[in-house]
Image (cartoon, rainbow, N blue to C red; front, side, top):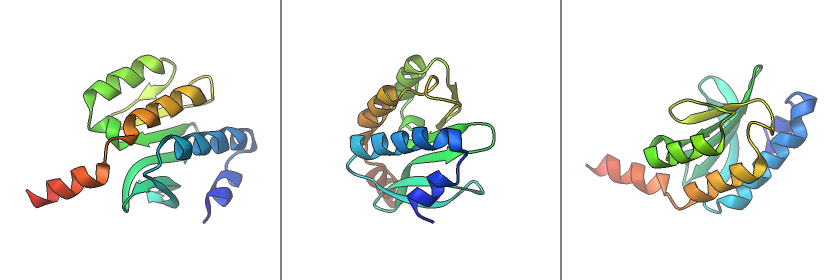
Length: 130
């Protein structure tokens, strides 16, 4: 499935917002490549760095989610993003939201730009060597 097919399969009222989210992610982190794959039993857009998932963008029945591995591995980033997005619901490594009011595109771009300098691929590859 392509990115376009994934977005066009989402509810119509989310499609423009998902497109804007996708474009902001792609613009804010030049290290990633988007693919649609299964994660946690659901298809989502995975943004991979050297074949390692760095971010994931999901659209489920009840909400949308941004999975963010750099945030999961960095408590300071987590706390910063939690303050920037007071209307979103945070879990360990993901942010759940219902609309642009919960996840403004400008804040998403800041989140991704802050995470772009963290190489998930390097961190995971170095962890395997230990």
